[in-house]
Length: 90
Image (cartoon, rainbow, N blue to C red):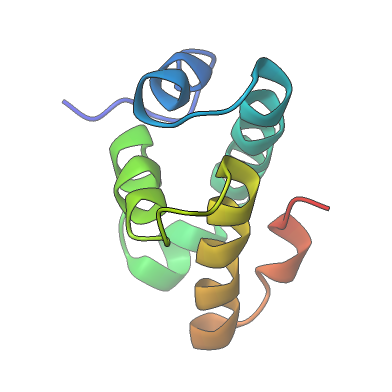
C-alpha cells in the first residue's frame, strides 16, 4: 500500500537521499503542498505518494542535492503541464 505524503515522508527522504534535516523538511513541506493542491493528481491521474516522489527524485542527476532534485522534477512538470513553479524550493 502506498503511503501518502505525511510526517513519515521526511524519514523516507533521509533513507533515500543525503542532506540535512532542514533540506528534508523543506522538500517534504513542498511535497505536502503539492499533494494538498491536487494539481499532480489532476495532471497525472494518480495520487502523489511518497513512492512517486522518491522515484522521480531518483531520476534527477545524481550530483544534485535534494532541493535541486526536487526543483529538477518541478521544472519537468512545469514544462509538461505548467503551474508547478510555485512548488519549487527557493
